[in-house]
Image 1 (tube, rainbow, N blue to C red):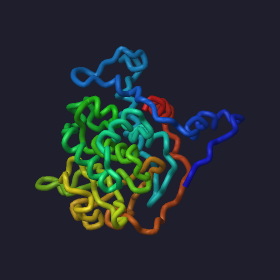
Image 2: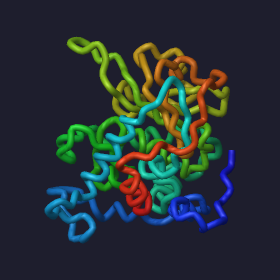
Image 3: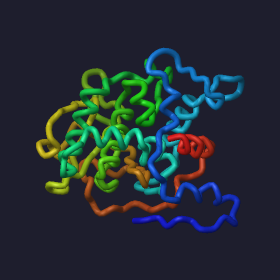
Length: 284
């Protein structure tokens, strides 16, 4: 499904969307320089200084992450959400493009590219909790943001894998990032988790590319199918570079390729965080 550029600027309320829908060329992320590789979260950029009643970029990202949990959906509902999704996938982006080309150099098919991407992340992006990295209990870091930091938790690794696949030329329809529940072991029946799923070319079956929960370096063609993954027990949502799909009471882990029953509900609903979303998207 393609979206045609909006051609009119007569509606003041619609005008902020016009730039969003124009073809975007890849460019270097302005978020990159905000995150120090070591030490405190400080920057000389006036936009992100900690001042009285002015949250910094970390606060903005944390609040947008929270807002995506708080959308009021029913059953399976699909919304067009390029602003928020571009923050967390940063597609297109010069830095991610260069990294993807380096990782997948010489590889001809998407299955090999997907394998190279997950293997690179597993070898180069160690797990670390948000509270230790950023001082927040839950913080979704965009790919260049997380790579600058050098470590991250489950969703940070998933966003990097997802972004690498898109920048490697894999169709957005073949890649999803899920949020849901997995079996957590003794003392906790389930725990929250995020992971990337890839629909491989060899047989059009979905497999899991997980960076922290039962990670594996296996080639995508040698991985078990996601629909048979009993340790992944429930899903809250998934998203790709175009859409956010809420999955309340709908199982898209063990039935990922079913005929969809969602309601297409236009744009991601307006929230108190919308302006922050546009601002962060412009910097992604």
